[in-house]
Length: 119
Image 1 (cartoon, rainbow, N blue to C red):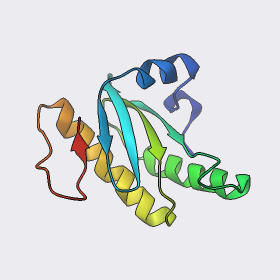
Image 2 (tube, rainbow, N blue to C red):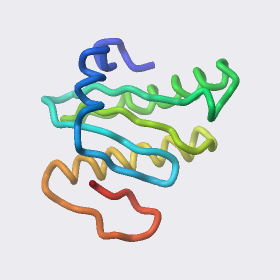
Image 3 (cartoon, rainbow, N blue to C red):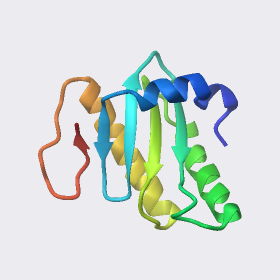
């Protein structure tokens, strides 16, 4: 589980929500802005996607576990849009974070179908 110091509080969450930087992938999107390391994150899993709260919270905790090992200069929110296994969602989240870090350094997506795109 991601420590509370590395999770976005309400004020930071609202600030990141207003950020124009968004990366979309096949399983979800990642809205972010730059910040000093180690960064802080939040995961949003809609009730309409996974109705069972126990499953929704278990997936959120698994994704926070993945984010615990990430030390990048970002504040970000991951919005899950498609249901899938925890392993493939974790892999997609890591790809989106890598693309976000590349987007902060000025690189842009190549336009390959299925790959994350920096907007």
